[in-house]
Image 1: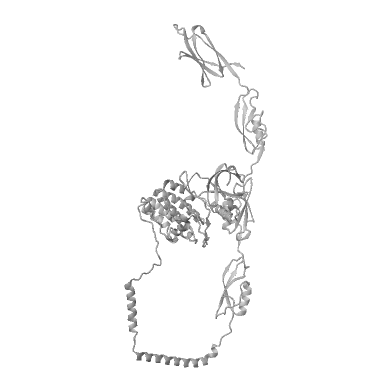
Image 2: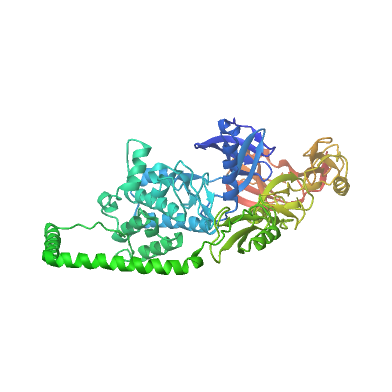
Length: 637
């Protein structure tokens, strides 16, 4: 298990563990290159030394990386570091559908349909790209904080082809959601995913699983043999049409299920609009029903047998006459056959037998000479690619050697077209995930190497080898060199102190650095217009194009003063009062005098500080008296 702080490939910094599975552990990590959070799936230590598991782990990434859909978890990168194999995925904040069902089940029909439609849309995209998930279950569906369903974990996905896929001896997929054909260890295809989705729908709609057992084997047997328990028996609020959709998706025979995820989505749309309509077409019938016969049927058969037996009884003399006639006929035929055979026996002498020779492994031209010599006809019925036999060599013949040739015998030959070669496609400047797909579709395999590049964007192919058009055997290796983007260069920060703004800008440009925010402040010793300080000190190493902020001096701050004289403000009968003086300067008001003053204290002399235009406001016992504008002129150091 990786500890927080571990950095994979100098890029992905592990933050915390967020999940685990049978083959891997999932961590939250930070991509230091793109400054974003990602999920990193790391193969468990016990499997890293097993080549089969490593290969299976890589297949997961290769399968999922080729998919791009709003309901499928994105794969960003795949790599290894110090025998740690990992896949970098989209980091999602949310819960698994299993947790969501546990907290909210049973779900409403509308929510069950919405989530199912999202999963079906993801499967439709995967199936269109010849990928079968083979492990659809609520644990592999993420419900984001925005309520979006995303399919994850293509851990046992396989690439589907037009040919039959031979399944492994052990059934894949989680046993509570496994299709009958997977449970038997037989053929599985897109309809197997739809079965697992149907079981998931059952769990969403009812809050329970349809099949429970004491062991995985007993649960698998229930999938194979037992009818699906009625969803409406578990939750009477489920509409009839939704129950029918669940039943059709989980039929035992794959041919009776939905033919595709698209067909399932069409019924889900109808169920959303017309929940009371009965439109789901379920056709599970027994093609060879057992025939049961009643006692009356058996009695009729025996009666008919007795009637036939009675009609066949004949008198004894009639039987003797018939027997003598048969014996006479046999004697007559024997005499005629004897004379005919003697007259024609020369014509029936056996001809010399021709034995078919062995030409497998010989060139077609050699086989032609051999057959011409034996006067045997032949024809080439099939030409196929073969890794064992060279071009024009005979792979198979029918009939085989040492067989007696019949009249007009034609030997059928299968001839080799040689080793099938596949041209290397042009994948330069292509996104590496698409390059992988094109190379695989071309019948070849690939190996990835990585380099920094100043022009080719991150993740695009810089070059590949062998060159485009080169012919390789099936599964031949094409090396694709993928761009790591422009390598960050570091430079030493120059000293900007004492320079003007323009000088500092030019100095930074010489080092491929950028002048950022400029702050101006007063300073007693640094002359006006010169740099006082910089955010990164001289001599430190930073990346090119790094932004350096500076502070520039406004020079020594000049403080201006003004003396204000306040004359007697008291009324005739008043001997004292509270005088308040307010200075208004640069939009701000400051109280500069606020005291109880006697008649003999006048006139008042007050010194105020500021700059530019100003106003003095006077108050007596908090009542406004007058205001006096003036301009600060006198300087004081």
